[in-house]
Image (cartoon, rainbow, N blue to C red):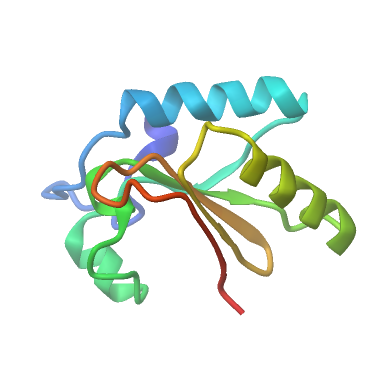
Amino acid sequence: PLLFRCPCQSEACEAPPPSNILLEHLDELRVRVNLPVKVTSGPRCLWYNKQIGGAKNSAHLDGTAADLSCRNSMMRWRLLFANFLAATPLFNRIGVGENFFHVDVSTVHPERLVWTYY
């Protein structure tokens, strides 16, 4: 899907397609919260991931991660949303940023984990 194209926009980009499991889980999340889920970052190529300071072993590099926008949320709603994500079995790893959530279904990192970017 065009929504998940690597932001590098290079014709030679080697970013993988998004995993089908990730897409299914994002859709399930959208249904559960009854709100649009805006993806701000999906699969990335190595070059772009390095440019933005992404982790060397980022799940974005294998198409199993997405960052979801929460720019217009008040802190309490963001925390409720984070708690909802942590309680659901859809995603095994959740990162909470100032204006986004990272969610992934990585099998390289199968442990359930929640962290912040602060």
